Length: 140
Image 1 (spheres, rainbow, N blue to C red):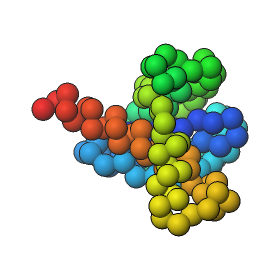
Image 2 (cartoon, rainbow, N blue to C red; image 1 turned 180 degrees about the vertical axis):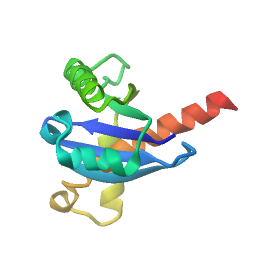
Image 3 (spheres, rainbow, N blue to C red; image 1 turned 45 degrees about the horizontal axis):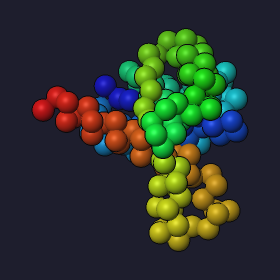
C-alpha cells in the first residue's frame, strides 16, 4: 500500500509518497492548497497516478507536543479531503519538518527564492519517512 503525505499549508500543499512496501518516502510535488482541499483535477491526477491507500496529513504541534494553533484547521481540511477522495486519513507530527527541509535545501545550494516551491514537498517527505520508520519499528 502506498501512503500519500500532505503538508497542508494555507497557500500550498506539499505532497510526498511512499513506495508500495511503505519503506521509503519520495517528494512528489507542491499544489495550491485550494486545489487539494477541493480535490481539483490536478490533485485527482496525483491520486490516480499513485493510488494511495492512506492520506497522511501533517499535524502542527508545539515543541512541547501539544497541538499548535493551526491543528484544528488542518483536522477539518484533512477530513474534507478524505471524504471527497474516499481515502482514509491519519495524522503525523510535522513539528520542525519545514525547518529541516529548508536546512536540507540550503545545504544543496538553494537560496530562499529557489526553495520556495520545494520546501513543502520535502517537509512532507520528511514527516512521511519518520512515520514509515515508526511503522516498521512497530511491526518488527
